[in-house]
Image 1 (tube, rainbow, N blue to C red):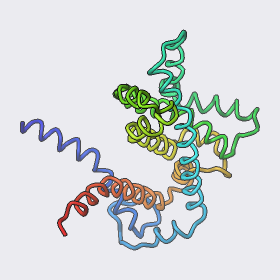
Image 2 (image 1 turned 135 degrees about the vertical axis):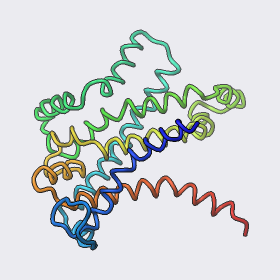
Image 3 (image 1 turned 30 degrees about the vertical axis):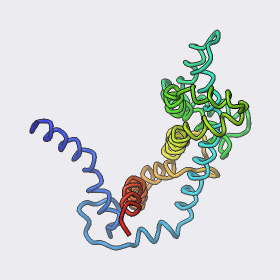
Length: 257
């Protein structure tokens, strides 16, 4: 038991360790990456929020992520129903095609998108990035939604139809409410996957549709801007807030008046 606990502590330290360096560096007064910081201030935070070269990629990433999430869900939900509930010729080949973006290295996919989207005249545009990120997000969302669908009790649908409900009403009032958590999680993973994706964005986003990961890559490659540590700290704060918010909500809701 002690050995397991020690191993867990080592893994936790390995995961948390970079944050113990990045977070203090975001408040550093140094002009480049320097640890430990020679001093502390909020100058780089002010610089981040005042500089459109940083805020615009954030807005681009959020917009592209939301569009990717919506398009992915619209594609994956019908595909999941077809793959889970139907048996047809070529089903294994279709399943392989759905998983292909997860199997092929992203650098290979990026080169393919760059060549193909150039012919379509959508290279360096938000549309091109959304389409590329949707292709990359489909396997993750498909696995989540298909797993939720496999655990769904179809007797609920049969009961609704026996009571006179049509297919659309059955889906909207019975199937959708039960599977809604799976749909939401699949969409959330599509958004996260798009927001975090860097390789394809570097190849096809361009300046007009530059995403935050691309901006961070360009910044550290060209000038090692300390604002990168600010961005990393803010992203960590958002993730931490998203994790603890449900816990805080439960405590507040269950607290006796």
